[in-house]
Length: 154
Image (cartoon, rainbow, N blue to C red; front, side):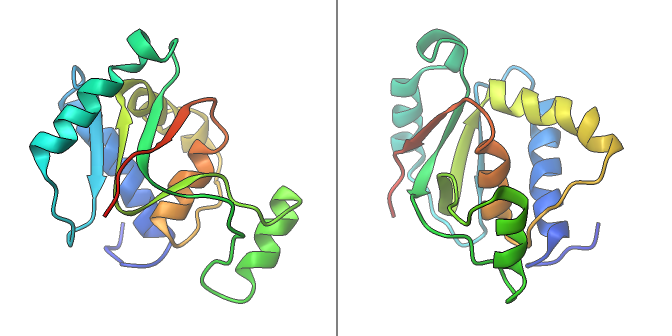
């Protein structure tokens, strides 16, 4: 993949990095994605995640997608055509909860799902990725029955 800041390649790179992290550390409970301009208080993040527990214990087998949520906004995209294309695909422009702000965390169940999807059906058929990795991740996870927690603030 070409290393770009904005484009479908950036979204693909984000998902592939999650798969690589999961393959490298399959016993990990949580996997974080953070941008290069984000500073994290690691003890505070670890304490927050410990409170959430892993999904198999506290979430009745549901995955966790945790971050600084953007709620109830309309999809805009990068170009004037993106909004109408999104509306044509989904029948509306309302976005699912999306974690933005340069840091989001998923648990091992969501990481395992992403890994399975990218080695299964999603690897066989092309799928539409938006230029924004935060938006695309939120759109994909928006189709899953997982916990979406707005727990990370700037």
